[in-house]
Length: 218
Image (cartoon, rainbow, N blue to C red; front, side, top):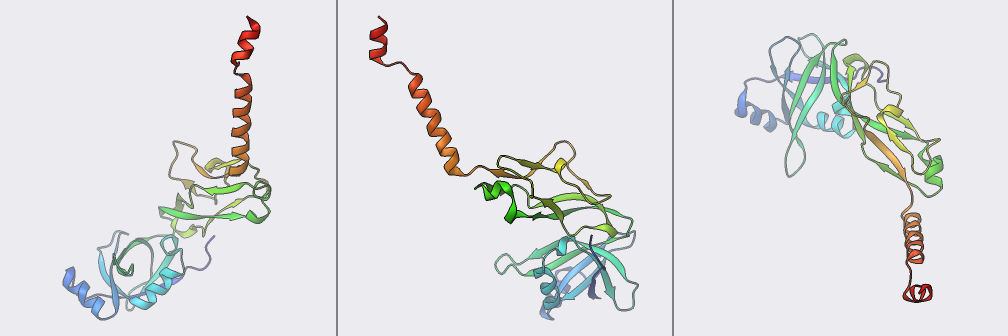
């Protein structure tokens, strides 16, 4: 589970609309908005370098933050979107949603694979194929897990890991409930598959009667 809720420092942004947003960017900030929680939306701005550092650390979208604005009470928020420059891939706007610790939220949680280096199937030449590197869960805002852990210690070649095989954090449930979706599998090495295919072709060829066989039968 996530530890101490990290702070996210911001300031009130004067004005709304594109003009105010451009002014914030000229001043070295990333404009944004905070909404939800039964309170009116509020325009904010966050220092560009400060936000970029947090984004590059990873897990920003799945982390509950303690939003600190001078002169206001702290409020817990979660990021619901980061708009980026299409060329430079740098943040240009951020959307934050207010939450209570008891609020439930759908959020994508990264998948972490344990014991991949000692996995029996991988050691025998199998290939770990990751179908989903993150899974959307419904969780309490105050109990957002850092990751979903999947232990590969006993996984063999040909094994498939579905969501039903995973022990989820207490209180967390997958948002997809109509099917037991696959997260990963350990596939047989391509060389082994090729050998099996060739062997099958040889057996099939042996089973096909030749012209001399047909003549002998006559």
